[in-house]
Amino acid sequence: MSRIGETFAALKAQNRKALIPFITAGDPGKGLTVPLMHVLVEAGADIIELGVPFSDPMADGPVIQRASERALANKVGLKDVLAMTAEFRKSNTTTPVVLMGYANPVEHMGYETFAQAAKAAGVDGVLTVDIPPEESAGVSDVFKAHGLDPIFLLSPTTPESRVEQVAAAAGGFIYYVSLKGVTGSANLDTDEVAEKLAMVRKHCSLPVGVGFGIRDAATAEAVARIADAVVVGSRIINEIETAPEGECVNRVRHLVAELRRGVDAASKSAV
Image 1: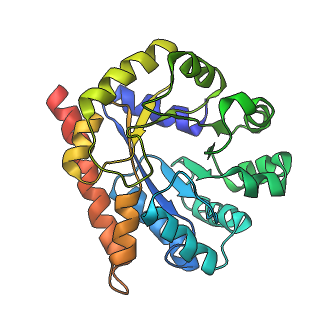
Image 2: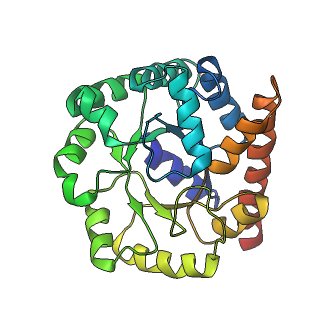
């Protein structure tokens, strides 16, 4: 079982849900990524989603787009992201790390070369937004051969037939996008999400994480009642972007701890 699988199994045994915060590698500075990863864990993260900076992040709203722009200005690329993960692994060998990004940097490196390097660095899963399940067979096979979980997105408009395709190709967990739109969108309807998740679970035994539109402890708690994991990105990046100089790490620690309390409140109320 992968580190991701082990994490979800341990949480299920404790009747708890996963918190998966997202940060963009290299934002706000190259030297802050690894400290931020450790702070995410200290504040309650179960899995870290680490964004690979890209010049055209089509699934991301303006907040995460700006994070990618700052990271690229800091000259952070895929090799740097792998090096950051390896550095994180020197003192943390248990928290899963999922790289989230786009196909171009991985394809440029070569899927086999990337998979080998990612595994050696301590990466556990890969979510490449623009590799749909219809085109993923060869890529997913390479990832799986190197012990990397290929993670896929589902959305409110995904038909049932496609859910079956994704379930067959995916590993680790399924990432359900709760809204029609980009990251950072609002107006989360948990009843609508719950209805869709019931359909997803008919075809998939993997845990389901829900992201997009989660901004505070209250929305984290609401999503944790219906999902196996709560994924938060734009709200954390916004905290990084607006923090006064020197306050970034503390701001992130405070927010993630608040989100953790929200996620745990859902488990306590379900007992």
